[in-house]
Length: 238
Image 1 (spheres, rainbow, N blue to C red):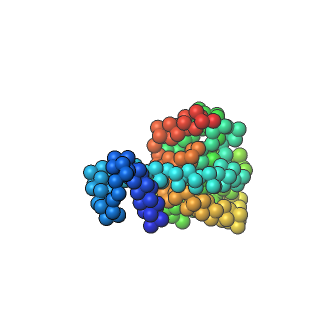
Image 2: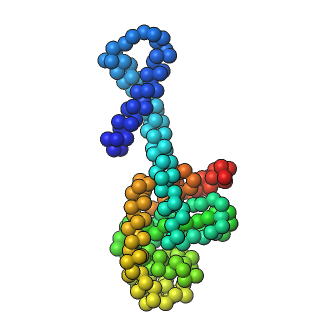
């Protein structure tokens, strides 16, 4: 936790406990030292108060960060979008060499297939290796080819680590010209998109993959049950 977060937690806890102790003690005056001791004693007996406060603070910070970056998360025209007319938007930050992303990929595609009201944004977010970055660049280059999902599926179907050889095989299997896509992937526009996505992830506090942004929350990891609960919650609010 950052120093800023610690200070914010202290302020929130102080105000909450101040109200609590005032309610208990009426108009009794109390020194700062005595009050501090009472707060410390209370927190030692009830550590869940601190945990709940930190969790609420983090949730509030996440909500603010998402709302501040909503357009970049959901409406960047450079991203590939499945079910573009869907009313509920889900954005996934993923890496093609991430084991958890690979395990979740078939279920992600099933959610897209079975839920036409879910507008799904693919955020290429390579964090694990140079090969991951190369794969993401190739996928971005294939965005308007009509074969993006096929390539996405082929990349995740590769055995083990996805390397340059596996990428060329995946491109061909997806019905694409490997040389043409590879050349397009070298463009400054593709590189800038990857840089922008990393910056966006930093704004949201996202460091690993997979991460899903749904409404005002971030679903961390490949827990599809949790993701569907977030989608259903977004539906209720829509």
